[in-house]
Amino acid sequence: MLAAPLIERKRDGGALTPEEWSALVAAYTAGRVPDYQMAALLMAVVFRGLERHELAALTDAMLASGSRLAFEGWATPRVDKHSTGGVGDKVSLVLAPLVAACGVAVPMMSGRGLGHTGGTLDKLEAIPGFRTGLSLVEAKAQTVKIGCVMIGQTAEIAPADRRLYALRDVTGTVEAIPLIAASIMSKKLAEGLNALVLDVKRGSGAFLPALEQALGLAQTMIALGEDRGCPTVALLTAMDRPLGRACGNALETEEAILGLRGEGPPDLMAVTYALGVEMLLAAGIDQTSTKARQRLENALASGIAAEKFEQVIEAQGGNPHVVEDPSLLPQAGAVEVFCAPATGVVTAVEPRTIGRAIVAMGGGRVTVEDQIDPTVGCVITAKPGDKVLAGEPIASVFAKDAGGIELGFAALSKAIGIDADLGEQPLPLISHRVTKDGVEELPVSRDRRL
Ligand code: URA
Image (tube, rainbow, N blue to C red):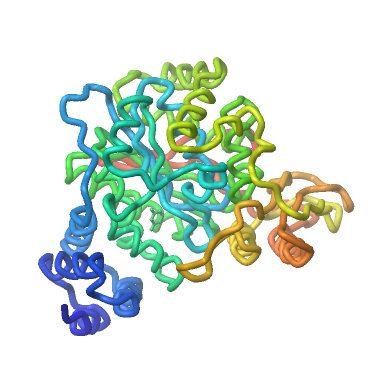
């Protein structure tokens, strides 16, 4: 296939036809278009964008690159959620088993770390033995048997996104509404869902920080879903600070397990419950938010959500005992406590700086081939608005060695701002609900940490 003229056309602001997108994605997936040409085209899309018909064609071509999960004749509702990416965002690990424990099937297909953000697959693979590369047959059988599967793109399922996602990760081509929308929706539409809930991040640590961009992304994905018969709703949530306390793969898996055991940090649980409520409503399991919330809380308190996670881990080859004993997760070689350098109010915990440091410490990829170290990261207990005293412990760094600790300390010193007063207010944790009918601004919680 002759890719160069298509790259040049996009570079110069023109549009590709649906047939060209389809042929290009098929040729790239089959290895007949090299990464360097695709990277050049992706960069042209970052600068020039895609017309509506091009985005539809790209999404459909990515969807058509692999097979889809099909559940004909199976009455159990199937709903999934997807996040646009953040730092400390381990919601999927709590939410998927929690919602499955409430009677909704969750056939979840996720991604790896992307740019400065972490990925659900890397967090799951921190569990010894956990396999995310299931076949279509295995994924379907597990969904029907235990109501939840957590997989990644494979040669069989969403292969185009698998290659494009890895390429975008290392070529500076993540931050574009059409590329994020096509990536997410091509995966989700392959899952055979009845409905989809999106967690669209905004704030300095999101790929698209501004409110208008986040709303634009939400509306773009909702239109793609609705046009393809998948009712889709989105919540906008804050990513101007990490979600929860733990950042880094094994550390986040541990915090997600704590969440399933009823000991999760309040902001993580608030986002998890809000998305869970939307999933239960979309599945038709409950008719009101209050009832849905109650059902989720009961599933968590009774232990059936944690049990569901054990079942998922066991079914996918992992060690289910990590749920009871998270110390079975891989442990870092070096750990050091980070103390507040001054007395005052925490003004910022900058997620991008933290996310980039974790990549540099070995917890993310710099090139497509990189293997990651699941143990590295940090646990930050301070949140914007907290009062701290000089010398008070506010974080811990987990690293491979002393060099990693140094990287972590440098990042925390840069990321955590302390001043006489808060200054700019942090974003509300959950600010908007977006549906095909419009945008609703949600009431702001009075709890500063939420
Ligand atoms: N999540 C995805 O699956 N794809 C993106 O491009 C960004 C977040």
